[in-house]
Amino acid sequence: MTDTPAAARIRPVAAAVKGAPTSDGAGVRMTRLLGTPEARMFDPFLMLDHFDSADAGDYMAGFPDHPHRGFETVTYMLEGRMRHKDSTGREGVIGPGGVQWMRAGKGVVHSEMPEQAEGRMRGFQLWVNLPAALKLSPPDYQEFDADKIPREARAGGVEVRVVAGRTSQGLAGPVADGAVDALYLDVSAPAGARFEEPVAAGRNVMVVVYDGAVRIGERQVEAVGAVFLGEGETVEVTAERDARFLVIAGRPIGEPVAWGGPFVMNTREEVMAAFDDYRAGRF
Ligand code: FE
Image 1 (cartoon, rainbow, N blue to C red):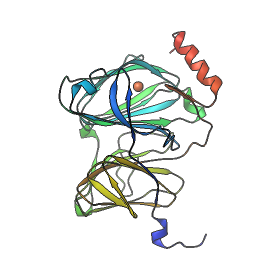
Image 2: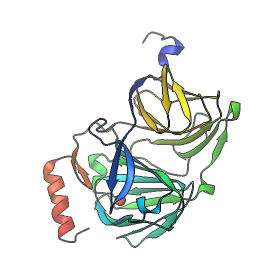
Image 3: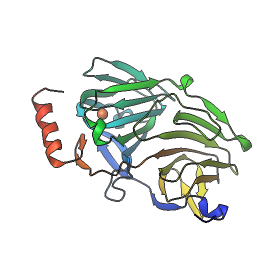
């Protein structure tokens, strides 16, 4: 390998999306940033939804009982509270700044319902694929309130909340994820500040701007918008206005993906088997 100049190692923007308005569950309105015809998947990430509304009519219907198999769902709340309940008997409330990282594995049936009848509800749900070897593993979840998510202060007033993975400065988030070596950071940066973080080549990285505006390379990204970064070693984001954004990275799985609604497997037959098992009450 020959040396590359520093600038060449900064990950460029490969694609930028504003997302598509969508409705899911029993009629919750949100913006789908990943998992659309425009941005199908970004291995190992399958889907990313952003919900943000102060109108209870947009979220009150919630997500009544529904199944999942073959991947993980990550719910990160910014504002508001969501109660979840699942077929393994567990139940909890995710509040502002909290995260639930659920491994559906071989199957869970769960509900996700607003724990409020008014006020703003804002956050993200990410779907992280699992490799074949873990698709039928036992369901499990990790859940942490905001006070369990450590914060790292950086130069220029930048603050990094570490939800999953470990930063270059050694701060580790509470979520232990062995499957795709996930990094999930929530960064706030005042106007003019620059955030820089090495993310090893071989991991896919996306940046999701949800407040303000940033610049990545030559590209301006306004909230709400997501960019998928190309190859490189370092993520560099400059806040053009006071900004908040997620930096999400993971190791691509590189296996065939057969996706049927709430089930994501490797083959069509495995998806059909998931529907059969669910209908037969084997979840
Ligand atoms: Fe769900």
